[in-house]
Image (cartoon, rainbow, N blue to C red; front, side, top):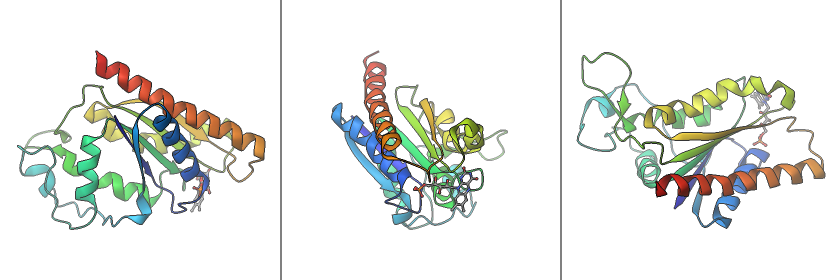
Length: 207
Ligand SMILES: Cc1cc2nc3c(=O)[nH]c(=O)nc-3n(C[C@H](O)[C@H](O)[C@H](O)COP(=O)(O)O)c2cc1C
């Protein structure tokens, strides 16, 4: 089983990254192969909105994007994986531009026939056998977790269409005011979520 963590903080050694790593460590402890993508380190050009990926090559499981950067390789790994963590700090009530650029470039996972009504559909439906976790960090206290909702919506939109089940949305707040004890608690919580992710995927794959 392979679990990928897509981490959208520009600070690759920050807390968002550390909690992503902790989820992945939990997943690895439960037997998964894991990989963390610190997205800021990859060449991910902005989507140009040409729609070539969506309108062409409907026989392929991943459409062809004319942009030449790291995304084609990432999407191949994305399709092969069994589970995902999308993790991002809240920046101005939504995801960072790093995360948003990545999400927009997932457009080749979708297709649409010219002239068809409605939004593009997923090229490959996962029938809820694949699962995902969403993690957002922010300076607002956890009692204001609603503030992170737009972040979760943006990170889960594609999963909804691809039929990947989001099993948990975790907001870690008051991020600039951590003491040792709270840090240890959050590491434990995120580690446990990684274990749970693997267990839920295994259960779904068995049925
Ligand atoms: C440009 C910018 C905008 C931010 N906007 C918000 C916000 O709207 N709400 C919030 O709770 N925190 C906000 N923050 C705080 C970040 O969420 C916080 O620094 C981040 O989660 C820490 O994660 P890191 O250690 O990975 O950098 C903002 C920070 C920056 C730099």
